[in-house]
Image (cartoon, helix red, strand yellow):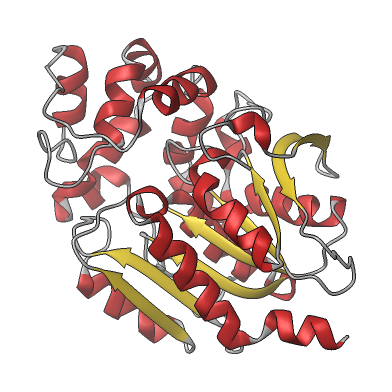
Length: 333
């Protein structure tokens, strides 16, 4: 498992019970016991791939965990339906439950970053009996909303959400695809480099005006950048996640989802102090909904924690899992 060589990981492509075809990496440790070896299910965000976890997979497997990392729906080698409704969080969670069923895992430690953090937390609400523990990165937990607010209204209250208004507009798909290299350079940039792109209209202007992005210091080397370019050529699926807000609200209301995560669920939240998506006030607010929350702030780090703080993320998750004694418990069985 060489992080710079995607082909060195164990890739699988299977049709789930939901009839959707998923590509995923499935790494099994030495001395694997199907009945007792804990499994880590890692869920990436936007605009990412299974490859976003490339630095964590190997160390976690060598520690003794099975690690399963899918390309989420619409990404990479996974199915890419054209209907927006197919990307609802409830359906994504059905896929994840189907993936666990496929690999013969009843309960897993679910780990999510960015959009994956949101999906992972909703998986804990829709399928609480399928989790051993939950790890969220970069995006703090937000409970199901008591009422629906269009993203345009949200962006008026939270100006740094303006980019989501752009993504929710179907016209953004072609514009992003036509300028994908620039788009990736901007999105994978380090904090406080280049221009702000989160405000209303800023990202679209940056792309369409062909602005110079050389000031954006990126997290991807040339090979990694090309890999993402090849895997994300079709952006309809990834952008569709931002077009499901009304559907998600209606699903959660109909499902009468709890605002609190399960009382007995251990939850770890890792966040960068330079990440505008992880404001301290939002982290504190999440505590009222998560009885067993532990958080760890990474000073000076931004949004792409698995890359810019790869060793810290790897070890913090392992240390936390060690305290839960999952491997020790498995060894006794």
